Picture (cartoon, one colour):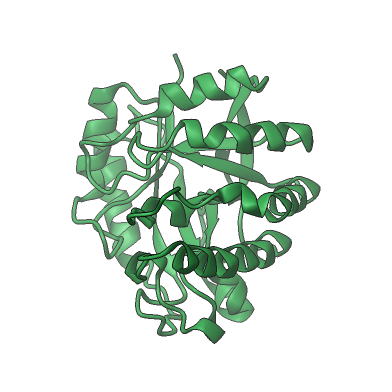
Length: 267
């Protein structure tokens, strides 16, 4: 069975600490065919400060060590998770001119600049009103992201839900934003872009089923799958289950990107 984990992080992300070669070692042991390291490049810091310069040197050094060790054993496209790129077009274009870049996940990890720009990870979700204020802001950013050019797939559309674990009578309803989700995916399809299933280390799977059904209705075909692992142990978690969800929804292929183009691999 072909297995690709196309959303992972190494020591080149500020929230991870494992070298790329260790991630590749685990991927090889796990039986992955493709491993794509998509380390963070966020144009807003976790506290909302502008971070418009990106240093590719550590990434390239880490990649060299990984390719020397595993370049003949694994497919290792060069990826990036690009956060809030739509806010700063000049900086975004500069970052994405990096030679050899294969894959760009477009993400919105932060509130809008007008709302302070802090990462959703830092916010308080003590009430459902807190949750919905954050989600209102998030989906407006995602609509702007999807309309722009700075991505290959839309990253983890349901992202903020992973942090909304308060004592609520009912959990936040993501389908309150069905119209926004529909439009985000329509824009991606219209531009020949894709979406990802982000399993969050195997923790979010069934939540993707209605998203996939809607994407299918819109004529979407390009889907990548990633664990969002920030360490070797969770690599690959949920990939097989995500493939099954895709099959159940009528999809026949999973995408892997090379040179910013999707290769469609039969499930």
